[in-house]
Length: 229
Image (cartoon, rainbow, N blue to C red; front, side, top):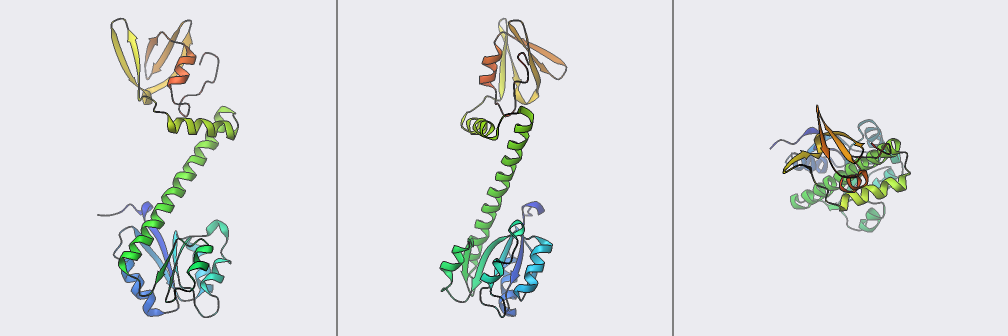
């Protein structure tokens, strides 16, 4: 099964051992959610690659001639810092590796099951990061539209996530009831004791108050912009 390019992890391997790099690259080729961007044998060149390609994940050897993997991390700018999986022949650096927030620590030769765990963990972390970024964009948009503070809008978001809002609005007309999909509503305004629900080229009339509608509709979708709208 093919994986969407946007869902694939862009990966770089950094290891001074040719066989270790080639072996890991071969294993990574078995995962359809991984795109191996490039391999590098020393930290100095790897830093350039990370700046240029901004990979999601770097498989990084710890002990290399010149700059070590741990030293290399301190040289990466925070805004392009990728997720790190250390790959080493020794387990003596495990505590130090996790101190610098590596997502995993693999021993050579890398076992396929452990590699799959590391890739799965990286995918989960990137997914959480994307969700967090989308929430931040939504927060900024809501703040600009409503004029409310970040704290007030954050509270609205938390409430909306824990409240099950209906996907349809029930509008009674005598003995009949029309169910209007929430996603189809353009806007709502008041006309005396009635609410006018505008849906495309139609207007549905319902007897209720603006306050009652506010409570029943998701505040992330509907905001009171006027006393009667």
